[in-house]
Image 1 (tube, helix red, strand yellow):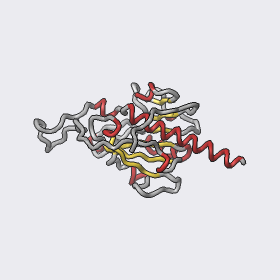
Image 2 (image 1 turned 180 degrees about the horizontal axis):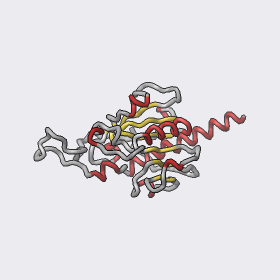
Image 3 (image 1 turned 30 degrees about the vertical axis):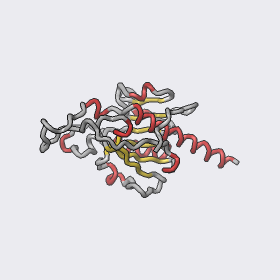
Image 4 (image 1 turned 90 degrees about the horizontal axis):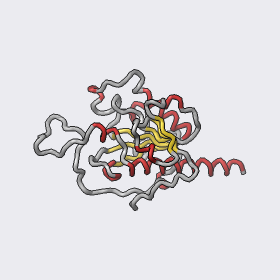
Length: 209
């Protein structure tokens, strides 16, 4: 696919829920960012959403995680908001959220028109492969922004698990890198949200005619 263009928010605001306190989204124009201090539970708009709900209670190493009370349920809240407003949710590829919440596997749809896209964040500048699932509602697969598929090997891994030779395996990314979103990937998700907003407005205009 073609290299992604820079996001063009225009007059569209992108609501970003469950972002890090020092999130890269805060540097992107027209992003309305909800971090841990600006509680996403206070979000009451009908605007399109980009959601990064906490994943440690859903991830492959969830048995080692110590989520805060109520943290696991935030992903389910994000799904409900996206199904109502439109938007995109990001979670690790091996997240158990998909079977638990009944999210569609690739090449299928749910009753809300939602569908799943699997990408590697390495394609968007991450040093590790970081395979990722996106749940998208409000736009067709053919209408998402173009993105490049990289075939080079990532320089880093996510974690140095037991069984790996620490002397010969690729180095692990930091905990901060694991939580952070590369700028190019953030732009990609924001552009999806913008296109969903445009599609919603077009549908409203057609309905009003």
